[in-house]
Length: 255
View 1: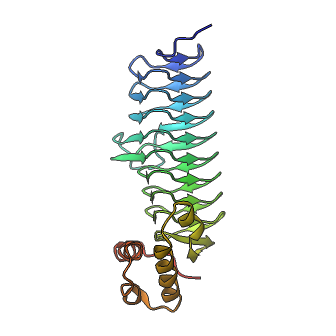
View 2: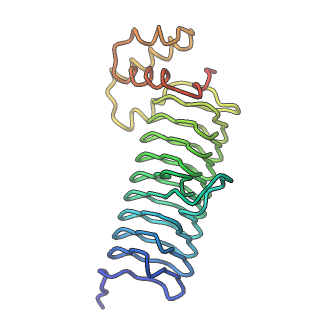
C-alpha cells in the first residue's frame, strides 16, 4: 500500500486551528494543539500532547517529541503580547521541552540543534546552530549561545548570559557570567577550567589554532589579562579577546 505524504497527517484527536499554516509531509500526533498563528514547515514531525501557540514559525525537518510547549506565554510580568518564536530547520526537540515566546522581539532557535528532555528556553533567548542542551538545562531570559556549544545536564544559566561558540559547560553548573568561545566552564559558581580541546578536535580545527589557544590559556592563568592575550597572533585567540572586551556581564573567573 502506498501513502500520500504530500498532505499533512494529523491525528483525529489533535486540535489544529484553521488559521495555522501546515507544510507538506507534516505529521501531528494525538492530543496536540496548534494555534492560529503557527507556521510549520515541510517534513516536520510533531509527537503527541504538544502545545504550539502564539506567533510561532517552525522550519523544515524538525522532530518535536511528546509533551513539549512551544511559543507559549513567557514568564515575565511585563509581557504585553508582542513577541514571537522562531525555530529553524533540522532541530531535534525531546520530551517536555519548553520554549517561551519573546517579550518583544524573537525567541530564536537556529538549525540542527539538540534540545534534550526537560530543557527550558526562556523568553528572548538566542540559540545558534548545532548547539546541544543536555537534559534539564534551564536558560534564563535573553541568554545567547554560540554555534557548537554544549551545555551539560541540570545547568542553570542566568538571564542575559552569553555562551561563546564551541564552548563546553559541565553538568550541574551555575553560569552567572559570560563564557568565552572555545573554553570549558564548570562549577557552582562556574569557573573557567581550560580549553575545549575535544570540541575543537571534533570540528577539525587546525593544530596551530589549538596551540595558540593553549598558549592563551597559560597567559590567562598567569593573570596577564587582555594585554597578554593580544600579543598572540591567531584568529581564534582574537575571537576570544573580542568576546571578553565586549562582555557586558563580565567573564566567568578562572579556576
